[in-house]
Each structure stands twice: as structure tokens, then as C-alpha cells.
Image 1 (cartoon, rainbow, N blue to C red):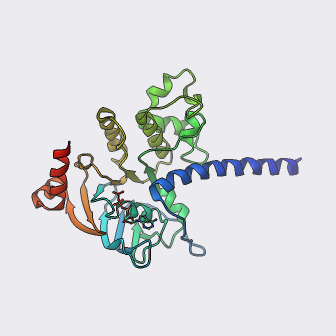
Image 2: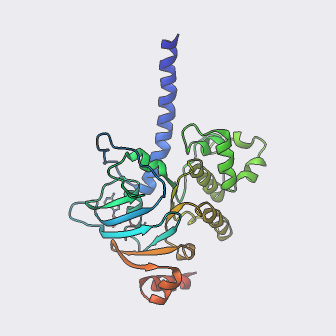
Image 3: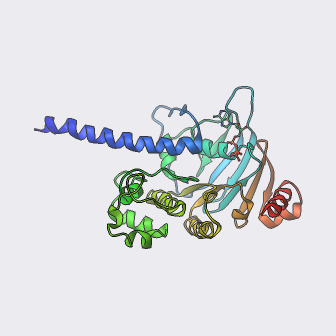
Length: 293
Ligand code: ATP
């Protein structure tokens, strides 16, 4: 009998893995836009995080041999701090996220999480430590509960509920006649941009990652919803090390530090107030956006 069941179990596992793989890839490719090409060194240990610091040390990287995108980039994020990365389009902001997720290895220099070079530990352990809230998430044609639980293999009901609460989507779910069992997506309930965003946040929170990477999470929302979501992101990032990639400067003014990237180099760094005083690239970008708004 076992022999009959094993293959079926296996099929179920393959099916789930493929399904997860698809959505992972859909999401990652949108953010990461890349082929996976790095390999674990043989018998690489798992990343062990006591204090989730993140550091780039003189990182040089490009996608193509003769075109350098990051030119010796260095910065440190203390555990629990919230830093924002801003800069003109094409400056290399998303590239930083891709490298931290170890979709590529730097040409030279190192990327450290809690003092460990991420190129020397298991990739899976690096990715497990980082939660990504992308700009717009992919939802399955499945229940809202499934869509949240999928953030972590084997997430239990308590973890899903707690994540939904922290993402401030619990009142919405509880008001649905079928609650967490409500089907969403093309054939089910259509969620608004803000609700989808909250499902994505809950999905990330199920992982309970010590490090968060926010990819300009609020670009497609109306300003009231944006403010609400920002407040939620602010709350969940409070005890996590957070890197936010942002285009709109109004969303980063409260960061502990803002890194202003220009052509793969750190052009300026400081708090919003520091940077305005500096009267350089950031001040210029700020003035331009104020005018536009
Ligand atoms: P934006 O604000 O427009 O999203 P960004 O600062 O996030 O820009 P990146 O996406 O990091 O910029 O891209 C930096 C540079 O690297 C760009 O010139 C881009 O064309 C190039 N680039 C990005 N991905 C690849 C890739 N997979 N292959 C080759 N070049 C790439």
C-alpha cells in the first residue's frame, strides 16, 4: 500500500512545488528580472542570524562584461534600521535588491548579512531571511488563506491569522461570508489594489523575516490607500532591518538613512533633512517632485 501512496504523495508535492515555483518565479522575475546563475559552494553552511545587519563592501557588479552597473558600492544597515535607496532611473536600485537576494554574485567586493558573506552560505537560507513586498503581487486562483499561507511552507492557521492581523487585512477577511476560505483571483473575488497589497504583506509576514525589502510598494494606489499601507509597512518594519527601493521621495522621508545612488555610486547619504541641506542631487530630485505634485 505504501508503494501506491508514495508516488501520489510525490505527485502532490511536485504539484505544490511547481505551483509555488511558478508564483515565486512570476514575482521574482518581475522584481529581479533575471536568470538564476549562482551556485552554493559544496557543503555551504546555512546563514545564521543573530543581529540582522546588512552590508555591501566595495561591491562591483554588472550584467554584461563590459558594462559596470555598481562601481564599488559600500554601505551598512544596522540591525533594525530602515534605509531607503533612491536615485535616477537606471541608477542600480533594483540591482542592489537582486544581489542581496543572491541572484548574482558581485564581480568583486562582498555582501554580508550579520557578518557572513552571502556567497559562502546556502542561498536558500539567505532567501528565507529576506521578505520581499513587491509593487504588485501575483495572486493564485485559490483561497485568500492559501494566498497568505504560501509565504511559508507548512504555515499553520495561527501564523496566517497573525500575519493577516499585522497586515491589517483581518477586518476585511472576517467580513467575507467564507472568511479565509473565500476564493480570490480571476474566478473568485476581485481584490482592490490595496487589498492585494495587504495580502502580499501578510504573505511576507508569514515568513517572519528579519530583513525586509520593499520595492516601492505603493506606486499604483490612490493617496489615501497609500498612506494606510505606508503606515502598515512602517509598523512591520519597525523591528526588522529594512531596505526600501523608492522612486517617490515622499515615501522615504522617515527612513533612518537615505542612500542616493547615481550611476552605481553612492552620490549622497544622510537623513532627509541632511540631504536637503546638502543641496545636491537629492535636493534637486525633491524640488522636482514637489513641483510635479
Ligand atoms: P528604475 O528606477 O528605472 O527601476 P533602477 O535604479 O532600479 O532603475 P536597475 O534595474 O538596477 O535600475 O538597472 C540598472 C542598470 O542595469 C540599467 O541600466 C539596466 O538597463 C541594467 N540592467 C538591469 N537588469 C539587467 C539585465 N538583466 N541585463 C542587463 N542589464 C540590466
